Length: 328
Image (cartoon, rainbow, N blue to C red; front, side, top):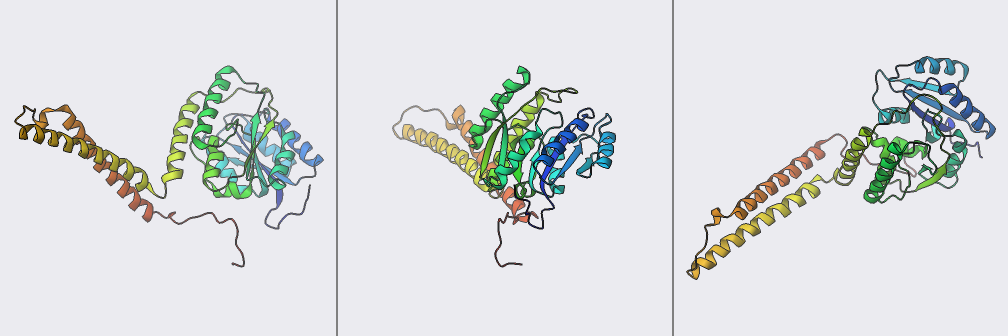
């Protein structure tokens, strides 16, 4: 692999590892990374993010960093979650390619050189790992299959495993997106909607957990699906909220008005022909139509206010620029 880097890339590969109570696995993991990347001649840095561990993880990181200059550490005051850890480390990463992996030794560092090659040589924006053969209990694998199926359907991105922690990114991707909540699961979706459409996939080795216990909980999928809805809405309508609220409001308003006009017209027709007819206000359908009109007006006003807020926001004109030519 080529070692000729642009001057603004101090290293070829940044490896971001968020962790929570993984003191036992860190020495073995960092030695493994060093062995693999040294064999392939890659310059690298490892950014370990201690997400509020209550064990000796930070002490281990400090000791390892004294012996290995490739290691960098970030320590949170409390547990903020994986998305916060990744987002913070992405801002600090210096590598031409940024890889993420879990600290529990279930992700193999042997995959890193090939992931790096796919970004640099095949020019992918993002490559996601696919744990084809998993060593997880059914309580984790079955919800994961459902999660992946729904995400594929909503996003249109044909990945088998959105939730795999082992991923590789062109640096432009991690510097151009923001991750929060449980949105680390949807980084491919966020990347696509920010214009990074070359998304690949690689089958990767998955191993049984060697130390500690899983931090997985079923509640994360509930939060994850809510975040998926949030990402979908924000990505599509952040710059034009009136398109969403205004459309819904207009449809509701017109539907209510049409029902009202039909009821009034029916009443007038029957009265003109001297036929018996109920009063318009005695019909339940009239009140449903009235609710539709009111809801339509409220949705339209919500869209208008959202449009005003968006236009006055400090980030209203921040766009990702891929290249510049003859510009300072």
